[in-house]
Amino acid sequence: MNKVLIIEDNQLNLDLAKALLQHQGFQTFEAEEGDAGVEMARKILPNLILLDLNLPRKSGYEVLEELRADPRTKDIQILAFTALAMEEDKRRANACGFNGVITKPINVDTFANLVGSFITEKTPSPPVETTTQEGPNCTEVPVPYLADVMVADSSPTSVQRLTDILTPLGYGVTGVNSGNEAFDAICKTKPDLVLLDSMLSDTGGVPVLETLKRHAETAEIPVILLLGGDTGDDIGTALENGVLDYLTKPVRPEAVQARVAAILETKKLEDALRQKTCEAESAKQDLEQFLFIASHDLQAPLRKIQQFNEFLRASIEDELTNETAEYLNGIARNSQAMEVLLGSLLSLSRIERKGAAFSSFSLKELIENFIALHQDFFQADSIQTDIAKAPMLYGDRDQIVVVLEILLDNALKFRAKDRPIKIQIRCCQLDENRCELIVQDNGIGFDPKYIKRIFLPMEKLHGGTKYPGVGMGLAILKKIIERHNGRVDVDSKSDEGSRFTITLPLNP
Image (cartoon, rainbow, N blue to C red; front, top):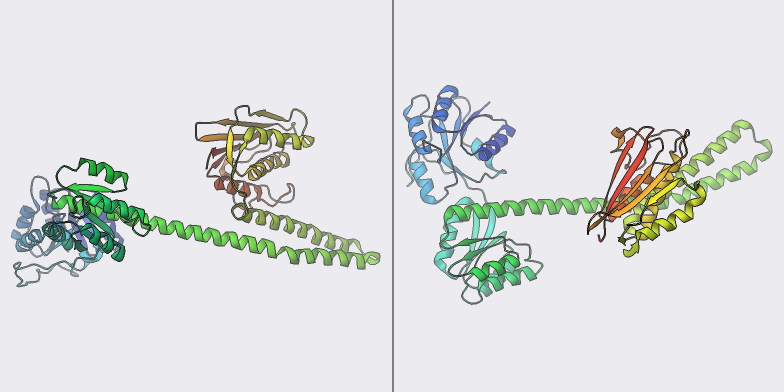
């Protein structure tokens, strides 16, 4: 196994480099300062050393000199590991005896392969001699292409300076010198990032920014504003219009590199998240479409089965034996269970597809009307309420009624046989944005370890036929609450009942 020694004092860079190299099968060792690194190199004789140039107490160049002077370590491949990526920095590193340069921030997609390209199998071998203008013992690390950057600056000198700063890191840089030219070029090329001069000669930078943010095709392109002179007002206006960061001229190379790398890494993560969200939404829609089609289309053949079962029973009624009757009853029972299941699946698929438009209604009035309609199922004191402070809610009134129906149906279904049923319904406003609805019963409850299972479709904690239903009620409830951008929590203990707490935004 090839050994890589990383001499780096920044823990984040150290941990990331180790993780990437170990994932590719390298054995890694580490040191956080020069003397410890030299001692470790002499001890393990690694195939390659990644050496930070800006170490505490002793610089990377001093460590390199010490390693090259020792016969045991002089032939080890050593790469400068640095955020200094100007051409003169690379030339100096190569001239001093580094075999190559790898720049920070680490590119997670290419880092391990770049390191591996310098590692020789078995024992370390001498550096390859070259005769380029940079001097002997220098092998240039191929710089991976990272992103397209547009520089819009009235000064051609500024454009060239930024190009010189960013190009060695792998960025493709395009420059323009006017506001009108900038907007047209950005619309045409869709760069990954724009560096925008606040003092563009024809339009100024902020008007270009405002135009970019008004157009859908350019609104998501990140922008860094380049400030020069008295531009306090520009900063405030730019931030209001969505600029992500700003730099003050004359820009420092390390500041430009750090800001560009950070914003592009954030953009990369946001794009990946946006893609995953789109894929998840597409999969969700496909599933809902399948549930709708399957549950709807299966109802017709199911009805035929029920009809044929009835016809068969009628045609042999005079010759019907007990055994045959039981078979036919089994067909009827199972087909009815299937009918209930398909109806539940259809209801689940229709929560998003067929839900009513949201409107404002009184939760207090809804709960009162609901209890009045269901009072025949309960004794007079079975349901206790505390809903005087229940607020107005903006949502699908009919679906909130379904939520209450599911919870009361469960309270009836899973009531304890040794005590009268008791149900508490409480509702209040938590703050200016949220309300809370709590439904608590004293039924048989369930073991808390099953909490994650109870909201899954067709999940029944109590198997068999002792308790009716197909295990879809709470899945439907959870889907409704999610449509309202709310959440549902449950607390339960066996033989002590369950408490469902539903938190809803007042205006989803």
